Image (cartoon, rainbow, N blue to C red; front, side):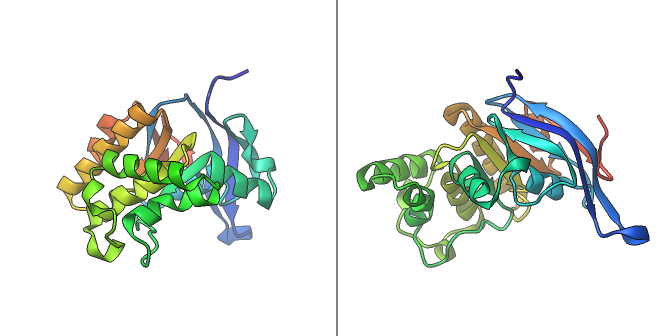
Length: 225
């Protein structure tokens, strides 16, 4: 049996049909070992986001299988996919995705509430995570009161709050300036090491590639290396 945390085997995904069909992914196969950070690299339109969506169960492939932590994602029904995203897979998006009316601490605590974590344990975990991402002094501020970089740090803390096995980050520094993006990338690298999470990060940034344990190149829906 494979020791991989993530196994992608023969994934195909096509949108549309006939002459207008777009072959977004073609026969994608790779594995990712636990506790590693992998950079998924490719030009806009190469299929990166589609691949991440298939891996996380947000989209279904036409053929092939995705296995995360021993679970066949492609065989799950909607309830199973919800449980997967609640317990094993989490996301960091380019646009942060924070709830505007909640404070930083409340945003980070959302996954723990969904997991019915006892309040005292939840508060300790939120405090620890905000300290980990360098925002201990901003717990009561709402997203609109934070900079873009601070919002992304809150989003990262929220993503790892429930101790997922796999963290999927789709261009997490795309909305940030170079200096802030570098600090966020370094934070992701540190979280892989401190939390033991496996991370799959799509990026154009050469610094992120340098920080990754491995780089996977995608072009026109196919792996190129």
